[in-house]
Length: 262
Image (tube, rainbow, N blue to C red):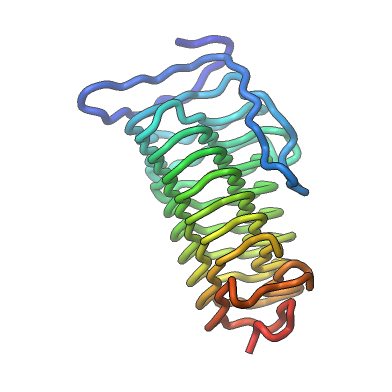
């Protein structure tokens, strides 16, 4: 169904059933409590709602509107080397919305760029984002109140922030390349039982930031280059329990507390 907006075509691969809805709706996702840099509350209007298995066959230009919202569980979107592009990070729009969903995959060597939030995940489980390029976003991936998130083998470059996790459990950030994400590459707030490993991080004010309310965080074998701030920052020097966290084998120069880079 089309209503007040036109979108590019998706190639749909699903043997039993496919649903592609173009609708005008209003969604105001609940944001994480206590966030200090959350997105402006924005309504999803003229958004492309998708479910099940989709492969892009051309780029989607979301000019002053949101991009794609996942409508069902068990959904795979393959960007297929194409892009979902917004109208600039100063405008309050989101590239991909995943809210109250399970078992969602975003993959395919494409690009999500020029949004206030590239991918917004809220109250969801088992979301896998891999082999995606993120550029020109205010926040490339924003996750709240979710678990089982895997962010692996992506590239983040020239964003204000790469990843922001609020109240996230049992998740992994691994094998990603971060370059020139001005404020931070990876940030965790009030999150537990997460692993940050084997990432290449350069040119951020905060390479990895973890607040003191986060516990059982593993930060292992990350490599930092061209630092102009702090490579690993645990709570800006607040009380930090090393027993509840594991930080080792990172190639870094500057950390808070200063003993983390050896």
